[in-house]
Length: 219
Image 1 (cartoon, rainbow, N blue to C red):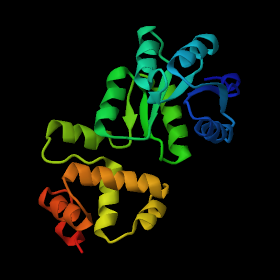
Image 2: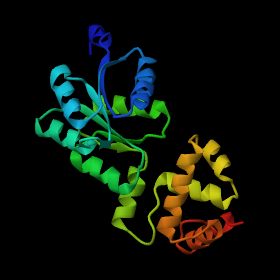
Image 3: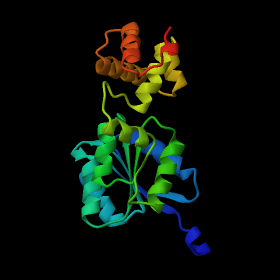
């Protein structure tokens, strides 16, 4: 790559129906001289129109949009034959959504509560290797898909379960994983639902029986 090419910033299109999230992502990218947010959209349709008009180097899209799913946007970009990097962001980073992103042709999959630097790193990967797939828990998800047994927790749910077992309160869990108390409660509810548990003690006991939690983490 020539020095002149180095001077041209990577152009990013942000697709999310929440203004605050788009603004936060824009700020994260603007902190890096090699990125430029060239456009923003709030729906699949608007995202495709902006994509056609702007031809960005990388697209960052939410999964849930007012007129469809971010996966639809990814599939359409691939259907048109473009090798553009596409990063899928989601609030619920479970295995099902991870594999949906992979099958749609995304370049990377990142949880919305991940640090902004992870989104930027995913964009860098997407730019260089748009047709390869990167995700924080890809190996674990593949392993769970090949050998499903018992309740399947996401990487973040496993982390929250471990903190629950160590006696952390909801607020302490939220601080520990850098999310709001509301998001922490959502993770805990999902854990209880998957384990068929009614409270913390019940969840810990069932997690140990399922092999999701080491015996020495109880109490």
